[in-house]
Image 1 (spheres, each protein chain N blue to C red):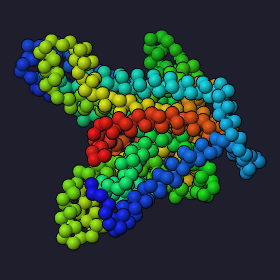
Image 2: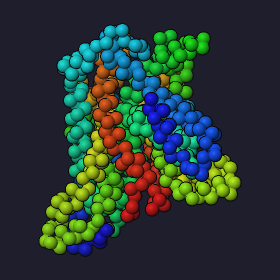
Image 3: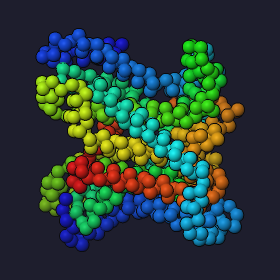
Amino acid sequence: MSRELSASRAHATVAPATQRRLGSQNLAQFGAYGLLVLLAIFSLVPFAWVVLAAFDAHATIYFQIPRTWTLQHVIDLFTEADGVRLIVNSLIYTLGATVVTIIVCTMGGYVLSRFAFPGSRVLLLGILLLRIVPPTATIVPLYLLATSLGFRDTYHGVILVLAALQTPLALWMLKGFFDAVPIAIEEAALVDGASRLRAAFQVVLPLAGQGVAAAGLIGFIGAWSEFLIPLVLISDQDKMPISIGMFRAWISYTQVDWGLLAALSITYMIPAVVFYVIARRALQSSIAGGLSGI
Amino acid sequence: MQPVRTWRDAVFVIAFLFPALALLGLFIVWPAIWAFAQSLTNRSLTGPAALHPQFVGLENYRRLLQDSEFHASLGKSVLFVLLSAIIGQTVAGFFIAYLMARRPGWQLRFTPVFAAIFVLPLAAPETVAALAWASLTTGTPEGLLNRALSLVGAGPVQWLQQYAFPVIIVVNIWRGITFAMVFFAAAIESLPTSALEAAMIDGATAGQRLFRIVIPMLRPQILIFLMLTTITTFGIFGLVYFLTRGGPQNATEIIGIYVYKRAFQYFDIGLGSAASVVLLCLLLILGLYYVRLMKEQV
C-alpha cells in the first residue's frame, strides 16, 4: 500500500525534460522500490519472532503464528517481581547516567563553545578521540578500578561509568548546538548586567534546549542498551539490568519462558527505537557534521 | 569564541569543564593507561597473583605473540570487519544508496514507513538483535531459516554450529546496512546537481559519473563513515557473545571476546590486559586518522 503511494508520489516529481525516458525510468524506479521492499523485509524478519512470541500462549524459540493469543506474558512481566526489578534497574542506571551526562556535558559543551584557552583545540580533538575507545578495550582495568574503589555491584558506580561512555559524543554535540546560538544574544545579556552564569543558564540554555534534549536521548539509548559494563560490574542478581537478565535467561536454555523473554525484549526495545527515531537527524549529523568552530 | 582574559573567566571555564573531564579521565583515560600497566604484570583474578602481582616485563606480549588463539582471534576480527563493516555495510550500503538517491530526473523518497523500518536493526539493543537472530537461525527444522530452506528441499542446517562465523557477519551487515544507506543517500542528495547534469550532457556514463564525480566529492563522508563503522565493529562484544559466546570451538572468538574470556573466565588479567592494549593501539591508530578526517571536514 505504502509502496504504491510513494511510487506515485515519486512519479509526480519526474522533471519534464526527461519525460521521454519515462519508460525506462519507470522500470528503474520499480526496481529501486523492489530493492527497498527487500531491504525492509530483511530488516524486519528477525523481529517477527520477538513480536509474535510475546503474545503467544504457547511460545517457543521458533517463529510461529500463535494459535492462542495472550497478553499474559506482558502482564507477568509487569507484575512479577523479577521482571519489574529488571526494568526498574535498567531505568535507574539509564536515567542516572543520562542526567549525569546532560549536566556535565551541558556545562562542558558551553565552555568549549564560548571560550578559547591554551590547549582548547587539542582538548576538543582529544575528546573526539576518546569517542572511539569502546568498553571492550578498557573493561579489564575498569573491573580492577571498580574493585579497588569499591563500586562493583553499586548503582552509582555503573551510572558513572555509563555516563563517562556517553560523554565524548554528548560533549561534541552540545558544543555544536551552543555554537549555533549567536554569541550576540548573551553579550547583550552581559551588557545588561547579567552574570556569566545567568547569561549561560537563562539566555543560552533555553535556546539550545533542543540540542540538550537530543544529546540526552542519544545518551539514554547508549546507556539503556549497554551489555558488557553491567555484565562485568554487576553480579548481584537484584541489581541486574534488562540486558543481563535477558542473557541469564537465554543461557539457561532448557528452562526459558520464551513468551516472557520475548515480552521483555519488546519492552526493552521500544524506548530505544522511539528515542532513536526522534533523535535520528541529530544522530546522523553527529557522524559527519556539527563540527564547526574547531 | 573568546579568549579567557580574567581570573573570573578562568575559574568559570575550569569549574564547568572539570566534571566532564573528571569522568573521562577516571573512566576512560585512566583505565586505558592502567591496562598497559597491568599488561606488564602477572596479575590474576584469583589466587596469590591477585593480591601480589609481580612485574613481568613484556612476558604477556611474548605469550600473546606465541598464542595461536590470539593470532586466530585477531585474524577473525580483521575478517569480520572487512566483510561486515567495510564490504557489507559501507560499500554495499553506498551502492544501494546511489541506485536509489535523487538525481536529475529521478527522485525517490524514503517514506516515513521505510525510514522507521530501516532504523530498527541498529536501534534495537544488541541483546534483542542477538536473540532475534538466535531464533531465526535455530538449528532444528522448526527454525525460520531452516523452514525457508526446506521450501527448496534443502536443510536443515545447524547454523550456529556449522556456519557461526558467516552468521555473525550477516548479523552485523544487517545491523548497519540500512543506516549506511540512509546516511549515504542523504549525502548523495546534498551534492549540487549541476555537476552531475553537466556530466550527463557531456555524455558521461553512469559508471563515470559515479567514480569521477560522486565518489570523489563525497570522499570525506565515505571515509568518516568507514572509519566509524570499522572502529565500532572492532569493539563489538555483546552482539556476538550473546549469540555464540565465541564458539563453537572459538570459531567466533573475535578480539573483544578473547579479552573477556582471558580476563574473566581464565582469570588471566595480565594476558587479557595485554590483548586489550593491542586492541586499544589498533583503535587509536584508526582513531587518529578519524580525528584528522574530522579536522579536514571544516
